[in-house]
Image (cartoon, rainbow, N blue to C red; front, side, top):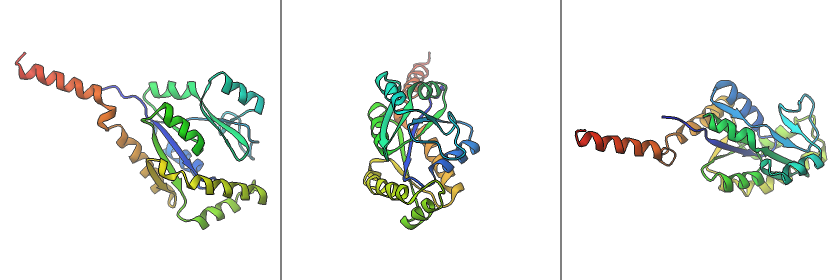
Length: 210
Protein backbone atom coordinates (compact mmCIF):
# COMPACT_ATOMS: atom_id res chain seq x y z
CA UNK A 1 0.00 0.00 0.00
CA UNK A 2 1.53 3.29 -1.08
CA UNK A 3 1.53 6.02 1.52
CA UNK A 4 1.10 9.72 0.86
CA UNK A 5 2.62 12.11 3.34
CA UNK A 6 0.49 14.02 5.83
CA UNK A 7 0.57 17.78 6.21
CA UNK A 8 0.98 18.76 9.87
CA UNK A 9 0.45 22.32 11.07
CA UNK A 10 2.15 23.26 14.35
CA UNK A 11 1.40 26.59 16.01
CA UNK A 12 2.02 27.99 19.46
CA UNK A 13 2.97 31.09 21.38
CA UNK A 14 6.33 32.69 20.75
CA UNK A 15 8.76 31.30 23.32
CA UNK A 16 6.78 28.10 23.93
CA UNK A 17 9.53 25.96 22.40
CA UNK A 18 8.11 25.02 18.99
CA UNK A 19 11.52 25.19 17.30
CA UNK A 20 13.15 22.94 19.90
CA UNK A 21 10.29 20.44 19.57
CA UNK A 22 10.58 20.36 15.78
CA UNK A 23 14.34 19.94 15.89
CA UNK A 24 14.14 17.01 18.32
CA UNK A 25 11.26 15.38 16.42
CA UNK A 26 13.19 15.34 13.15
CA UNK A 27 16.32 14.07 14.95
CA UNK A 28 14.46 11.22 16.61
CA UNK A 29 12.21 10.12 13.74
CA UNK A 30 13.26 9.93 10.11
CA UNK A 31 9.95 10.24 8.23
CA UNK A 32 9.49 13.97 8.75
CA UNK A 33 10.33 16.91 6.53
CA UNK A 34 10.35 20.28 8.26
CA UNK A 35 9.25 23.02 5.90
CA UNK A 36 11.40 26.15 5.94
CA UNK A 37 9.31 29.32 5.98
CA UNK A 38 10.09 32.63 4.36
CA UNK A 39 10.03 35.75 6.53
CA UNK A 40 10.81 39.46 6.46
CA UNK A 41 12.00 39.58 10.08
CA UNK A 42 15.67 40.10 10.82
CA UNK A 43 17.77 36.97 11.54
CA UNK A 44 18.59 36.28 15.19
CA UNK A 45 22.14 35.43 16.24
CA UNK A 46 23.16 32.07 14.81
CA UNK A 47 20.30 31.80 12.30
CA UNK A 48 21.23 30.95 8.72
CA UNK A 49 19.30 31.83 5.57
CA UNK A 50 17.70 28.67 4.17
CA UNK A 51 18.04 26.74 7.43
CA UNK A 52 15.86 28.44 10.05
CA UNK A 53 14.10 30.68 7.52
CA UNK A 54 14.42 32.13 4.06
CA UNK A 55 15.07 35.75 5.00
CA UNK A 56 13.57 38.07 2.40
CA UNK A 57 12.92 41.77 2.01
CA UNK A 58 9.35 43.05 2.06
CA UNK A 59 9.51 43.61 -1.71
CA UNK A 60 10.81 40.07 -2.37
CA UNK A 61 8.13 38.56 -0.14
CA UNK A 62 5.31 40.46 -1.81
CA UNK A 63 6.52 39.18 -5.19
CA UNK A 64 6.19 35.59 -3.89
CA UNK A 65 2.61 36.39 -2.89
CA UNK A 66 1.75 37.85 -6.29
CA UNK A 67 3.18 34.84 -8.12
CA UNK A 68 1.23 32.34 -6.01
CA UNK A 69 4.36 30.61 -4.75
CA UNK A 70 3.23 30.42 -1.11
CA UNK A 71 0.72 28.03 0.46
CA UNK A 72 -0.03 30.61 3.09
CA UNK A 73 1.25 33.91 4.34
CA UNK A 74 0.52 36.08 7.32
CA UNK A 75 1.68 39.14 9.21
CA UNK A 76 2.86 38.41 12.75
CA UNK A 77 4.34 41.09 15.01
CA UNK A 78 4.76 43.41 12.00
CA UNK A 79 6.62 40.87 9.81
CA UNK A 80 5.56 38.65 6.91
CA UNK A 81 5.78 34.87 7.27
CA UNK A 82 4.90 32.33 4.56
CA UNK A 83 5.28 28.72 3.39
CA UNK A 84 6.80 27.91 -0.05
CA UNK A 85 4.41 25.62 -1.94
CA UNK A 86 6.72 23.53 -4.15
CA UNK A 87 8.80 21.94 -1.39
CA UNK A 88 5.75 20.92 0.66
CA UNK A 89 3.89 19.22 -2.16
CA UNK A 90 7.02 17.47 -3.46
CA UNK A 91 7.82 15.97 -0.06
CA UNK A 92 4.25 14.78 0.52
CA UNK A 93 4.19 13.08 -2.89
CA UNK A 94 7.30 11.14 -1.79
CA UNK A 95 5.49 9.87 1.30
CA UNK A 96 7.12 12.14 3.86
CA UNK A 97 5.07 13.86 6.54
CA UNK A 98 5.63 17.60 6.21
CA UNK A 99 5.51 19.81 9.29
CA UNK A 100 4.65 23.50 8.97
CA UNK A 101 5.58 25.58 11.99
CA UNK A 102 3.35 28.59 11.36
CA UNK A 103 1.24 31.20 13.11
CA UNK A 104 -2.53 31.03 13.59
CA UNK A 105 -3.32 33.30 10.62
CA UNK A 106 -1.40 31.05 8.24
CA UNK A 107 -2.91 27.93 9.79
CA UNK A 108 -6.38 29.08 8.78
CA UNK A 109 -5.24 29.47 5.16
CA UNK A 110 -3.68 26.00 5.15
CA UNK A 111 -6.89 24.41 6.45
CA UNK A 112 -8.82 26.02 3.59
CA UNK A 113 -6.51 24.43 0.99
CA UNK A 114 -5.75 21.18 2.87
CA UNK A 115 -8.83 20.37 5.00
CA UNK A 116 -7.35 17.01 6.04
CA UNK A 117 -4.21 18.59 7.51
CA UNK A 118 -3.48 17.66 11.13
CA UNK A 119 -3.34 20.79 13.31
CA UNK A 120 -1.48 20.92 16.63
CA UNK A 121 -1.14 23.81 19.09
CA UNK A 122 1.83 23.85 21.49
CA UNK A 123 1.03 25.21 24.95
CA UNK A 124 3.25 26.04 27.95
CA UNK A 125 2.52 24.24 31.23
CA UNK A 126 1.36 27.64 32.56
CA UNK A 127 1.46 31.32 31.60
CA UNK A 128 4.26 32.18 34.02
CA UNK A 129 6.55 29.61 32.37
CA UNK A 130 5.95 31.26 29.00
CA UNK A 131 6.85 34.70 30.41
CA UNK A 132 10.05 33.31 31.94
CA UNK A 133 11.06 31.66 28.66
CA UNK A 134 10.61 34.95 26.82
CA UNK A 135 12.70 36.77 29.43
CA UNK A 136 15.58 34.35 28.84
CA UNK A 137 15.76 35.29 25.16
CA UNK A 138 18.69 37.66 24.80
CA UNK A 139 17.23 38.83 21.48
CA UNK A 140 14.07 40.18 23.11
CA UNK A 141 13.93 43.82 24.19
CA UNK A 142 11.29 44.94 26.70
CA UNK A 143 9.20 46.28 23.82
CA UNK A 144 9.68 43.09 21.83
CA UNK A 145 8.54 40.92 24.73
CA UNK A 146 5.49 43.10 25.31
CA UNK A 147 4.62 42.78 21.63
CA UNK A 148 4.94 38.99 21.73
CA UNK A 149 2.82 38.73 24.88
CA UNK A 150 0.15 40.84 23.20
CA UNK A 151 0.28 38.47 20.21
CA UNK A 152 -0.03 35.51 22.59
CA UNK A 153 -3.21 36.95 24.07
CA UNK A 154 -4.74 37.13 20.58
CA UNK A 155 -3.49 33.64 19.65
CA UNK A 156 -5.02 32.13 22.79
CA UNK A 157 -8.44 32.78 21.27
CA UNK A 158 -7.56 30.48 18.34
CA UNK A 159 -6.59 27.35 20.29
CA UNK A 160 -10.02 25.72 19.90
CA UNK A 161 -9.61 25.77 16.11
CA UNK A 162 -6.88 23.08 16.33
CA UNK A 163 -7.24 19.30 16.45
CA UNK A 164 -4.91 18.60 19.36
CA UNK A 165 -2.98 20.41 22.07
CA UNK A 166 0.61 19.55 23.06
CA UNK A 167 1.70 20.83 26.49
CA UNK A 168 5.44 21.36 26.21
CA UNK A 169 6.67 20.65 29.72
CA UNK A 170 8.95 17.63 29.25
CA UNK A 171 10.66 17.75 25.82
CA UNK A 172 10.93 14.00 25.17
CA UNK A 173 7.36 13.32 26.26
CA UNK A 174 6.08 16.12 24.05
CA UNK A 175 8.06 14.85 21.05
CA UNK A 176 6.76 11.30 21.47
CA UNK A 177 3.19 12.51 21.93
CA UNK A 178 3.42 14.54 18.73
CA UNK A 179 4.87 11.57 16.84
CA UNK A 180 2.11 9.24 18.04
CA UNK A 181 -0.60 11.69 16.99
CA UNK A 182 0.88 12.01 13.49
CA UNK A 183 1.35 8.27 13.04
CA UNK A 184 -2.24 7.60 14.11
CA UNK A 185 -3.50 9.84 11.30
CA UNK A 186 -2.18 7.42 8.68
CA UNK A 187 -4.67 4.81 9.92
CA UNK A 188 -7.77 6.98 9.56
CA UNK A 189 -10.31 5.32 7.25
CA UNK A 190 -10.80 8.65 5.48
CA UNK A 191 -7.13 8.56 4.43
CA UNK A 192 -7.29 4.94 3.22
CA UNK A 193 -10.45 4.76 1.11
CA UNK A 194 -8.65 3.45 -1.97
CA UNK A 195 -7.02 0.66 0.02
CA UNK A 196 -10.33 -0.26 1.68
CA UNK A 197 -12.02 -0.40 -1.72
CA UNK A 198 -9.24 -2.61 -3.07
CA UNK A 199 -9.73 -5.11 -0.22
CA UNK A 200 -13.51 -5.11 -0.72
CA UNK A 201 -13.10 -5.82 -4.42
CA UNK A 202 -10.59 -8.62 -3.84
CA UNK A 203 -12.79 -10.25 -1.20
CA UNK A 204 -15.75 -10.29 -3.59
CA UNK A 205 -13.61 -12.14 -6.13
CA UNK A 206 -12.55 -14.74 -3.53
CA UNK A 207 -16.16 -15.11 -2.34
CA UNK A 208 -17.23 -15.99 -5.88
CA UNK A 209 -14.52 -18.63 -6.05
CA UNK A 210 -12.77 -17.00 -8.98
